[in-house]
Image (cartoon, rainbow, N blue to C red; front, top):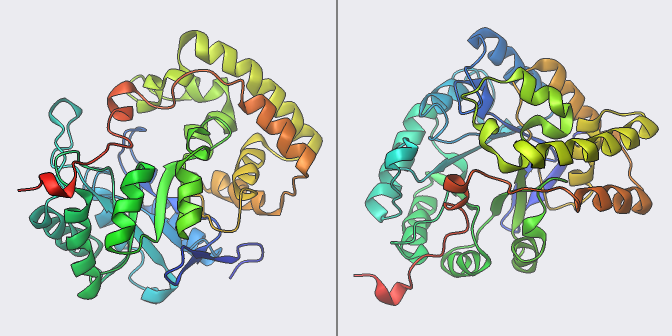
Length: 341
């Protein structure tokens, strides 16, 4: 295990992961643009694991489907227990124009079997319901996931972008090990209710987007470097007047980073890492230098005064965190079990 990458307990069910994970979406074609040469991405993945970052996060949505296939290939030479594979399911369609959501037992099982085949593994360490389905009670979805745990096809169950009430209902059927949610200095909406709910129930937290899609690493340069069809161009925080306002705040943030003798990405990631010992953020990248930079965040120490100063800047950021179509799919309440036929 690399120095500085410690192990943490994720949730209260016995799962252990590296304190820093790797979001793997950008290793293949994704909403953030075309993938890089496969050979380079395999090197990056091997480097991550050998550096001690063994918590790898993917989804059947990424690619779609191809990301899981890719992830499985370079891990063949590694001991299975040395890597914690997390993947997700939910979408029947992968086109935003015709998006459909399913959480019925037949679909849950079919998705799990398909992911196992694409990853070419006997079990999935952490299996997330990517977004909840309003038409199927969460108890029904969880019932099938519980069966998959009992059959040894998955080890732990997770939810992504779920509401507090959904988390409680799901947890009552079978313990939830982790909730994945967006959490960064640019996105703190879950601190009021979702995160306290997780901590009350002993559920681990997996922050995605800790660098807010690269904005907290690159500022204006991010928008100059990405193509027009990149999903990040549709994030309200990164558009128009919101962008200009937030860039002024980014400059203030950058000044703190200079004083701390670190990069803005390291500072942003360190802030997330300082939120507790029950979380494992999963910044994504397709560049070796960015990965190494992220590892450096583990050695950044922030004082209570530093945290207050950073959060005072964060509180002033403007704009919604996601495109309205995607935001509408988050924290969706499911119908009561009594309504299920």
